[in-house]
Every structure is written in C-alpha cells, then in structure tokens.
Amino acid sequence: MLNTVNRKFFLCLALFFPLQETLCDAPKDWQIGFQPAASPVMEQLTSFHNLMLIITGCIGGFVIFLIGWVSWRYRASKNPTPETWSHNTLLEVVWTAIPVVILLFMAYPSFKLLYYMDAAPKADMTIKAIGKQWYWTYEYPDHGNFSFDSYMIPDKDLKPHHLRLLSVDNPVYVPVGKKIRVLTTANDVIHSWALPAMGVKKDCVPGRINETWFMATKPGIYYGQCSELCGPQHGMMPIEVHVVSEKEFDAWITEARKKYE
Image (cartoon, rainbow, N blue to C red; front, side, top):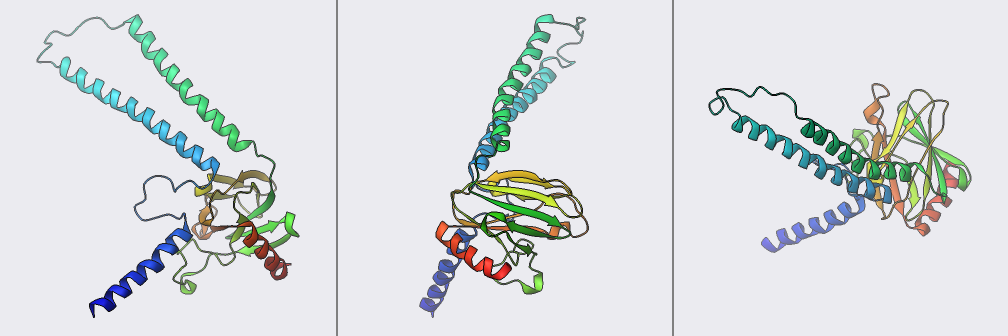
C-alpha cells in the first residue's frame, strides 16, 4: 500500500514540475517583485529596479537615522534652552548638492534604458495586436497577413493545464531568439498590451498605431493582460504568448494559415 502511494506521489511530482517549467512565467500567489526576466529589456528593467531599490533604501535608512538621532540628541530634557540660530549656509549647500548628484546618478541609467526600450532594432517579424471590447485580434503581416481573435477561456471550459483569467483559446506564437516588432492599436476605447516577463507595455489607441518590441530568450508560455481600464470586462482580456523553436513556429504558421486564412 505504501509503495503504491509513493509511486502515485512521485508520478504527480513528475507531471507537476514539467508543467511548471513549460508555463515559465505567470503571476503566482503572494508574489513579491517581478516575474523572472525572459527578454533583454526585462533583464535591464530588473537590474535598474534593483539599483533604485538599493539607493532609495539607503536614503530612507539615512533619513530615519537622522530623525531618530535629532529626536534623541535635541530632546527637551537634554536641551532645556533651545538654540536660537536657524540657518547654516554650508549645511544648506551640502543638502542641496548631494541630492542633485544622486538624481544625476539615477538619471543616467534611466535615460539609457528608456532609449534602449524605445529604439526598436531591425525586426525579424511583425505582429499587430488590436484591442477590442473585450478580446484581442492578432495579425501576422509577414506570414500571409492572416488574423485571428483571442478570447479568454471561460471558467466552465477550463482544463487542468489552463490558468484562470489568463489562458486564451487562440494564443500568440513567436520564435525564440528573434526580434519581434509589435504594432498596437484599438477599435473602440484605449487598451494596453502588456507582457510583464518581456518588459512590454504599450497603449492601444483608436486611430493610432504604436510600436514596441521584444526578444524572448527562452521558450515557454508567457502571460499578460490588458493594462488600461477599458470597461466592465477589462480583467477578461488576457494575453498568452507561446515562445517556441523556429521549427515549431514554422509548423504552427503552416497550420495557422490553413485555419485562419
């Protein structure tokens, strides 16, 4: 009996861990911080965030220390007669100059990262994402210009490998290691196409085409959501992107053209 239970237990583990590896990046309960980076942009965003966290943490700690020290050093019991001076030119210059230097130190990597994110390199392929209430339409102009709609899978149709409020009926497929240009627009109201693991978030504005890009560095399934309030079903516009090998992508393109053209 015990051996049977052990076999079932290890079988469950064997089934569970490959699934987790395949899912790659999705929100998790009680998660703190970003999803693991899966693109060069997100790697730099994570690094920049960590640097800013260290700097602001040091500043916050220093300020708390000063408040505590001043409260103790100049308490009423130790200083019954308060000082009468109110200005110190040197001190005022120092506490103005040091924050300026810190801000300049923070600004350089910030502007460098903003430029890197905005200056889209020569793309290997293009996808167009069109936001609609409340689903996405995707077009592949470089592969026959076919298009398809992508709806969230409702609760009643969920299967064990699906994620509630994140899985869709027709996910996006892209090849790993390729630069993907994403053109975004909308048909009705403003939406926002966001894929956290790739460091992507671009507004979809009716009558306007915005551009962003990403390059997935590892295969897997990546999830995002519409990130601009767009109506009562705003939370039901998930994004599911499958990053696969080039061979698998070519096979999917062949099937997709037959299915959607």
